[in-house]
Length: 287
Length: 166
Image (cartoon, rainbow over all chains, first blue to last red; front, side):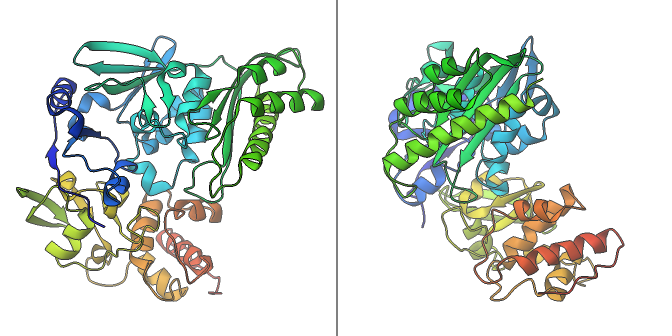
């Protein structure tokens, strides 16, 4: 399987990359880790005439603290996320979820920017970013803007990115100290996308849920924030009836496709179970 | 399509070639360089048979273009033996523990395990299994591959590995 012919560009700055993508138009695609795009090109499901490889842009790499946020460069790999002490201590759910993405080889190449910008409903980071209240920095011919992860996803592979724009970094507010977290992902095997997955970040106070945010992966054409499910959990001690209620509220907004991972009813059902499990585990690790 | 001149280091030697942008790294290694130790299994980024070590990372060479490897330092299975030509601890482990049957996945397994042991010289069984989870073997059931890596880990640490192959 050999991809179609294309011209290869390797800009050294974001400005050069934006200019290339703007000038070359729809026939050009940015190339990050390539572990979604290259397989698609080999199958000729993607046939870009130009690839703009972002690996030459040093400014897109690295993880830094900016006030109460962690700013992660778009070309930071999953492997680098896993190696980051800052990520592991301040937002361990990111570490936990990165470990569930694909396999070691893919994580050496796969980037957080590619994962969140591609708009693939199967990707794990988008729902996590919504749960954490992250925002994305987009740079394009018209300048720079920040878009909340919760406003970024419009449909499967459709996002707020305008032609010529590149997602350059992800800014994640550091969750409160002592927060509880869990990413529960049901998958058939290592490397698979989720049959359904749920991210939970919460804080506890006096044995009751004080704040709660829940995100859902691969149960809709976009990642979802399960707002009603989170509301059902807040103020409770997550008793059995509450867990059932939260799971049902989450299932009510799911609209997964029937595929090899199972029929719609099954994927919704296990999606609810992922929510209940993630809530319980998050509460157990909260301080 | 115009060809691009690329240079890189493979198993310690400077190599060069002319490639189309669409030439996958694995094709460059096998066809331009004539080094066929790196295997092509699934071609869909799943099986790991094409794994090579690039600048300290295990990479599926079917999912990267040769032009992207410009200037990089690559080790393939041909570069795994000791400098004097004797088997490395890992190669010896695969031999002693019968870590292969048909052998098709072995180049990827050894190259991947090499990086795993560099990062974690004394992995637990679970860490080994997760560490090679991007490499598929259809013969062994993985048991003896895990033992081969445990053998190498023990040997690198100067300990004798006492378990027998299954």
